[in-house]
Every structure is written in structure tokens, then in C-alpha cells.
Image (cartoon, rainbow, N blue to C red; front, side, top):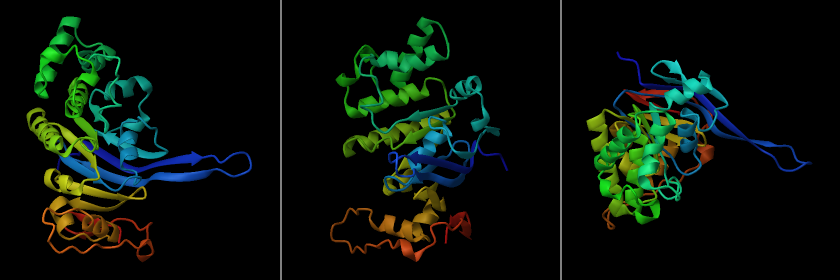
Length: 294
């Protein structure tokens, strides 16, 4: 059995909130003992409602946010122990596509300069080679290289996200953390961007951590999925098995809220009662390739 490309072990991230001089600070457990693995070439889904800790998990993996505790093994090396220079080098292999294509691009930079920036930071190639690489990346993500000199506001939302994807691909990474990459886009554009990401995965042998709250999207594109609730993974496994037979009450409630295409189809919303389960229960195997905190 081959080793996973990425292995997250007991990841923890706590934020401390202060409330003035006379009140003691409180601790927010944004990520609370999260563990999972992702195989090379896999599209792994991480789902949950807003505030569940999924985006914080993705940022901790890349050390955009420093974790409180845990291990993140990339190709067997613990990223959290890397000194600054080694971490800078590792970021060539681990990139992120942000949720908002509007705020993630510098409005004062031309699109070509945005995509070229990672190459400049890592000192790769001559100026001519970098510009050729940028034009190649524009074509790869379905953008016209003739538009390299345009500013972000001159592109549509879907085109801006393609620029973000091109920037993430500039350094030939192995792992892409896609942090809700289509949630800020119109529904008509979402499918185009998702198809692009799937095509790039096949062509470039990419591995994705796909963070989303759209369960139907995750069901269609991810081979495995983990469900997060209040900073913890409460269910994880093969996507088909998990969607066909969810075991955790939170997963059942989440799936019951997914819209269906047929407005006349019978619906039965499952209310979530936090008192009905132990929120601190560890994951245990409930079926083949299926774990739940029950």
C-alpha cells in the first residue's frame, strides 16, 4: 500500500478571544483533533456548514494559519516543523485557490503580473521564460493570453477564479487546497470552473482537498468525504457509502437540507438535536471504508 500524499494527524487550532480588562478570555476550538489522509491524485471533500472549521483546517495545513498542535505530513515530512526557508520551498508543492475571486486578486496588478508573481518570488526563469509560462497558464485555464495586461475588474467572476487557479498552478504543485472555489460564483459559471478543475486534475495529476458546503457538488466529484461539525470530523468515508447511509445525526440533518430538483418530490427534513449525540465521541469504523463519531 502506497503512502498518502497528505496525512493530517490530530490537528488543533484554538483562537483566544479577549473581552476587555475585567473578563477572562475565552478559547474558541476552531479545529479540534482532526485527522485524515489524502492519496496522490485523489479529490477529497471536506464539508460542513459555515463555522464548522473546514476553511481553518485548509489554512492550517498550508500554515497560512499556524496550528496550535498536531502534525501535517506531506510526502512523509511534517510541514509544521519546517523552518521558514524550507516552508517557502514546500509551498511550491502546496497551493490554495481562495473562495472569493474578487478579494483574492490584487486590483492594482495586471492579470499577467498576478500569475507571474509566484515565479518571481521563487526566482524561477528569466523574464521571457516567465512571460511564456504565464501565457501558457492562461491558455491552460481557458483564458485568452491577449488579456494578460487587463486588470481584475475587467474580468467576470468566473474568469477571475480562473486567474486564481492559474496562479496556483504556476509552480507545478502536487496539492491544491480548493477553499470553496465556486461558492461565490453564479450557478451557471460554477459548473464550468468545476469541469476545469477536474480536467486539470487529470492532465496534471493534481491532488485536491476540496472544501465546500455544497453537498451535491461534493457527491459528484469527490471519491471520499469528511463531514465537520464544531471543529471535529464526525463522519468520513467513501462518498457513495456515506451519502447512501449516513450514520451521524449531523450528517443526516445536513443531507436532508439539500435542495432537490423536483419541487413535488416528498421531503423530510431531519432536525438536529445536539443533545442526542456526544459531540466529543471519537470516530469509529461503522462499515467498510466508513467511520462515524457515534
